[in-house]
Image 1 (cartoon, helix red, strand yellow):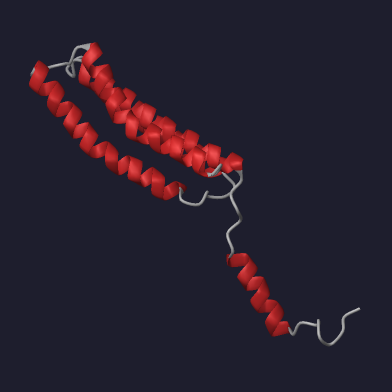
Image 2 (cartoon, one colour):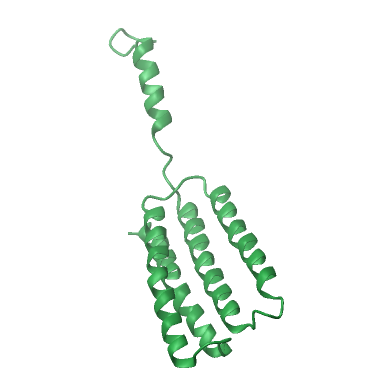
Length: 152
């Protein structure tokens, strides 16, 4: 039984409904974990792909299929991440983009050092793996930060 003091006008009800529809759903710890795992997998796959293409002889026919495989793999991670999370955790996108942005100077620096030490041609596997680990590190650290930021 509504009293005149608690009764909403149709305009007030419509405004409250519109406001509730715009309010994002809060992210759960599961959503935060999904974003963290997706970011970490992106970094690991990027580092692994980079190590692979730096260590192979590009004239043997492995380069083109590896590009296709990497694109499918990274797209699958992105699609899974978007579908698995019910809400975007606060700050997760920003942290992920910062991790990706930091990957670029690490990539160029690691490749520059590797090429100065080894020269041209395929890199030896230990050096290629080191470059891959260095490149993956910013995104893996960002993933850790996404995961723990929900617990603070």
